[in-house]
Image 1: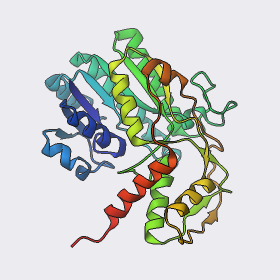
Image 2: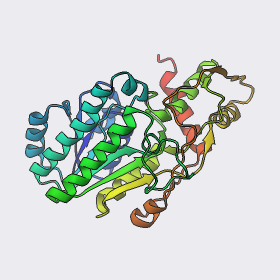
Image 3: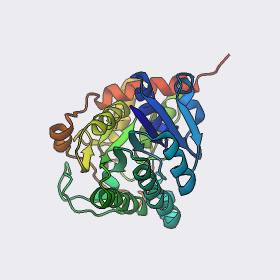
Length: 316
C-alpha cells in the first residue's frame, strides 16, 4: 500500500509511520516540523520512508506532491493541538485545522486516493457531556475553538464523501499518550507527569484533580488507524477505553512506579476551557472496526515512563 501521513513527524504520526513501514508499505510523510521532530522518524527514514517538509496550508504544493505520489490512503494527523493556543488565536487554529484539512481532502481527491483517515478529537468536541461514557450521537458542545475547528473539519470530510465520493472516516480520539508524546495535547499530562517523576519534581494539578480523562495508549491508536484504512466505514468513530481516570488517580499511579518518591502535587487554578469529565464509548469501533483497546493505564504509564527516563538520561 502507498500511504501518505500528514503530521507524520509528530507524536502519534511517527508511531503510525513506524507501523506502516514495519509491514512494508511505501510511506511518505508531510510535516512542516513546527511541532513534529525529524528525530522521531530516524529509524523510519533509514528504512526508506520519505519526508517532505511541507505546510498543509500550501494547497498547490500539497496537491502537486499527492499527484506525484498517488497515495492509496491518506492519514491526516497534521493539526494545531494546543487548546489554550486556540483560545488565544482561534483564527490561526481554524486556518490549520479547517483550511488545512480542506487542502488535504482536495489533494487526495485530485490524486485519486481511495481513503482518507482523519484524526479528530472526542472530549474537545463533546464538551461537558450528558452521558459518560459518551457515544458518537451525543450533542456537540465544544468549550474551545480547537474543538469547534476539529468538528468543522469532520464536516468537510463528510462533505467530500457525499459530494465527491471520497471515502473518509473521522476517528475521535480520547486522550492519547505514550512514547514521543507532545505535552501540548490534552493527554500531555502523562508526558508532563513522567518528566516530573524522573526529575524528582512536583507535578502541578489545575483545579482539584478530580477531573477525569479517558487515557488511550498510542499503540492502540495506531492499530485503530490501520483498521480504519481497510474498512468502508464512514462518519465518526470514537477511539477510547471507556474508563475514567482522574488526575489524582494518575498521581497515585505515578507514585506506584517509583516507590519512595514524594511526588506531592501543587495545585493551581482550573483552566476554564477544559471539561470536567471526558470518557468515550467505543462500541462502534468494536463492532465496525473490530477494534478494542489492549493497553491499560498502568501498563501504558510504565512504558511511557521508561521512554521518558531513557530520553532524558545523560549521554556519554
